Image (cartoon, each protein chain N blue to C red):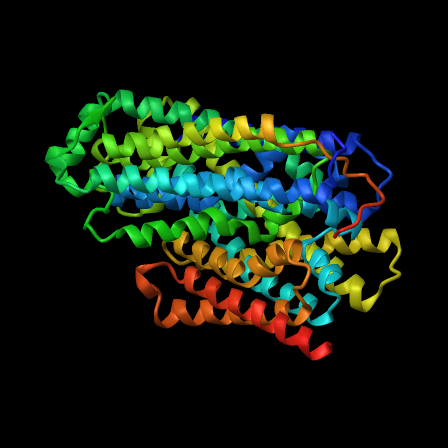
Length: 89
Length: 475
């Protein structure tokens, strides 16, 4: 686990955070305004919810939770926070 | 007055507090008093970290104000609020390990500490302390009011006595317990919130005759309630999207979140917090706001939006259960208040008093001073909250935006951009802070978006510009 400098690991994980939030935004926006932008009479309903809401909000939360679980399990590395010596460059 | 609900409510809250105090007493460490009192000795585990983040952020705005607005606006407001799911992972991932390493190296206990060591500037310290005190004061007042309202509508006590009970409990608890007690109760409170909102949502769906029939009721009352555009069609996509910045991504810069990102024990705890936090924040936000929307067909015509949650809980649940479930929003408000109180107190004691007035103060003196200031602050906020404005959510969002505009770049760039200078930080704080206040006052939605977006852009330009200029000046 000590193959990399902790600052490089941290930078990579911050990038993952940005990618996740961009993905989350696109998912949220595309379903909400893609499926929601019509007259309510024409809405489809899934489990009683309008389809735009079901995919954007409900499925969105669980998709993100799963993505976070997967990225953290497979891409995040343990780093010792007690290390006395590390260089920032 | 609902006797049974009142009793179960207070018993639940009382139990939470007793547990917090007992546990925080038994765990003694050999850290300094300040590190213990304000940061729990940097030893938070994953579950506690996730829950304390959730409980701190899931405040009166999301538990009382938010569902109230959702009641009036419909599903469009749930769509807006769900942007907060990003706080569950984004904040921790961005501040991340790099921030924890730097904070530990700097021995930072507060966000201001971090800024002080990073930028080595007295002006950064004074400016940031000043903005924290101003903004968090109004945030606390908003939370106080929410707590008072909630107790008022459950117990039937007058607002003033309700507020008094609320404030007294919080002050005693925070003053003696410090950060560790606060984070421990946060995890109990977070769990109550999670379970409470699920129970409440399910009961509402049952008493509304199922989701489909609730949706039909909403649609026949006003079709806009089930669109993404709000009750009168005024929630535009760019306005709703800008809440990604305000309540999602920008939360990184809130001091109460920042200090939690430096208080975890090891990276295992950090990883667990990410996983638990995302799910818990997502479920709580979704549930709370859906409850607000679903309450509409069941209890039409509620006029004070802040009372939607307590009224609907008393309506659909048996009284004893309503008391326990309502302990969840009360718990949320208390934990937010607890941490804000500690934060303002630490700003005064640690960032101003110890830095500039008496650096060599003895442990005993610091202890007495920390507790006195904490208690005193609580009393001052109480006096402000006695005469409250109506919709607490706006007051609270105002605070959040102001802090984000001031601190987002000094914190984030301070971590990731080695070339950022103190001039950059000062410029970003001043331009962010003033542009946000001016925009809010005179031109609240530039480009159809929340003012925080423009202020952050201005503040970023100021940060980079001033950093570049000061570098070339010193070369």
